[in-house]
Length: 394
Image (cartoon, rainbow, N blue to C red):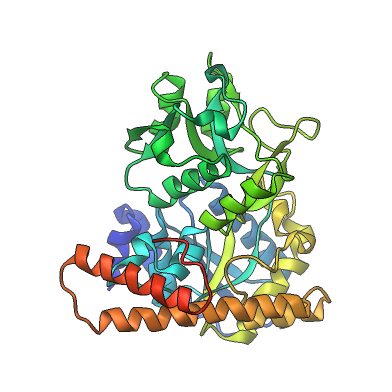
């Protein structure tokens, strides 16, 4: 089991030994630290070392230690699966992750559409909604002023990154386009895609406005431009939400070319998102949620983008349901409404429909991976539509 986790998380040997110690120590803390309801030791998975998500988790860990005496061990993982393995195995209590291991895991899509996974009953505690956007950046010299202007342009397709490519597809839909309307240029990775724009091999790619690659393009001879997604374009936003319900309208003031005086009217989704599985102890989830919100003043300036964890930045009608323990805290804080509860109940119903559809497909005992995928997505779509839900991924 340990070797499998190390392989999936892509650790070097030294990091693997540390990860082992941390994972098996994660459940060791049983004393409630300073009456907080938290054990004296917690463990999260997060994005890889050096990422914004990892840096934020470390900063939050510092606040937990200084204010509550809680040790937070952060296990970095290079991809969605590597962050989810320890969470599913109960080796960590929570994961600070993105839409891949939250929304797409819930949906049983992409990496989570294999026999080893299937739809996951994940729950949100709290999420960061910061002042940056996640969108398609373009070379300023490419003559692209709107999303519709991407028609016929060279757009980066990152091999092995279905979530990334789906995000671009959703933004293309905003402009009434599909991947068939652009020239798809394949790259082996995210960094290579943005280097491709600098080197005039492509004209557009997806990123956070605060990505180092975006700053690199801004400083290059080609320059950088973020085509807007006007918030009053109701039809465009409907097309975007139909393709990717996790996107939210956002005016970004942080990132390459951006400032408070020159914001980007575009789209974003929460990142990082602190999640647990539905069976996680509600009392522990309540205590973790409370600590995240009430310790915010202690960590709010510790890392770029970390201001998004504030209580007034939470979006309670998002695309993944909240955990009952988190809801208890938000009710006490007076910010959880009957409308939020109805929305949450509907999301939990969606997860149940997906779980039942998965059981039906698994019972067919299909060995061929391609045939299994075909059967899963057909059964999934039929079940969701019958229950009044949009399949999204087909």
